Length: 401
Ligand code: LMR
Image (tube, rainbow, N blue to C red):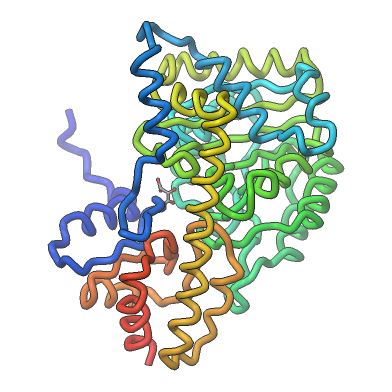
């Protein structure tokens, strides 16, 4: 039966992760896959997660199914996170019946369910992603049968956002298509839109009848929860219908619990209910019902004022550590006399930056120095620590000279 099959090349990012794990050199540095690491290079369980788990251990009295949409308490808490009360008009929006949320297995699960929903409900819609985008977006959307197109986003020579190019490309997107935007911490470039740019994009999408779909994988990792959800809220002010896929992998450190959500905002309550039922249909035909543990943790934290405040502090600490590493990286390279200006890294946000290191240098860093970077040159700044930054910068300086 399977004799004609050839193995696939697999996902290069996962292959890099495997190669890193197999590397026995104790000095190895992982700047590959997007997981947060603390100053000791460890991906910690947040203290608030441990506390929530202790509460669940005491109070949980059943492991029965939770239904296709997951726990309503989680859905409501996520909606309040994405559409915060501090933003004008959100209370009214949340009470309007236009918003509905399902719990999904990770942010990727939300992307896949959204893609199934788009394919089923808007059969002629194509999906447009930024060039570049998270490599797995292509796999997820194409696996659901969607045609994926790209719009301009990154200007390689200047290592900056090509906003004029982006707007020109979005002008050419046909009405009825879907445009995927990154809420913050753009993966892989670390380049985000300003509030003014979000306004322009939202106005254009509204005028052209294009539906925004936001991938919110890093909320809280750029500036603050409020700032990082500004784009979502500006879009919600302009566009009648939109989708938001959110992940709790990074901001709650719950990578392997696979917890995320898909939020639908529709023009009116009837449309929201119809869309919600279609999304639940897609879930039932996919994995039937989501797992509970990660959702129960997030819901416990977000629905307890004390735990929520403590979690926000933990999130702020992760965010500041990454920012500090960005600054140290730029400063150390400059102190080592590297001529190339890496100042752009300090201006970008989130875990990732396009380092502009060539594939040859990336390869040499892995072979000669046990430093793991994605082939495109994307670096996970969260993998830098006070104890590995000097060695990292020395290796880069050596290879650039
Ligand atoms: C990444 O881009 O490194 C993360 O989103 C992890 C993943 O699954 O690819």
